[in-house]
Image (cartoon, rainbow, N blue to C red; front, side, top):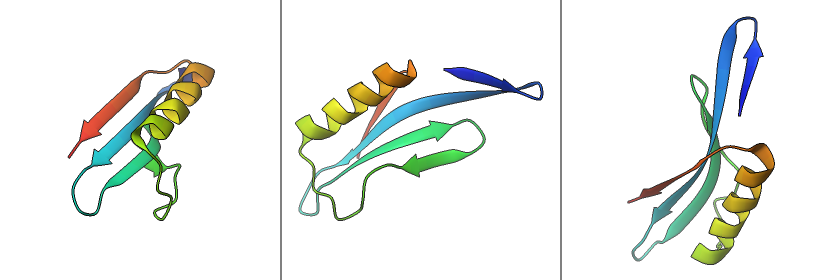
Length: 72
C-alpha cells in the first residue's frame, strides 16, 4: 500500500522476524521506507509461529501489503 504525501511515496511492509534457539523470539512489525521498523508485539509476548503468521497475514490482508520474513 502506498500513500502520496507532499510528493513522497510511503510504502509499508508487514514483517515477521524469527530467532530460534534457547531464547526464541518472534516479532511482528510494520516497516515503511525511510522510517524503519515499528514492533507490533511486546518483547515478553510469547507467540507461537502459527499465531504470529496468522496475525501477519490478517494485517497484510487488511492493509493490502506484502509480508516479509526474516529468519535469524
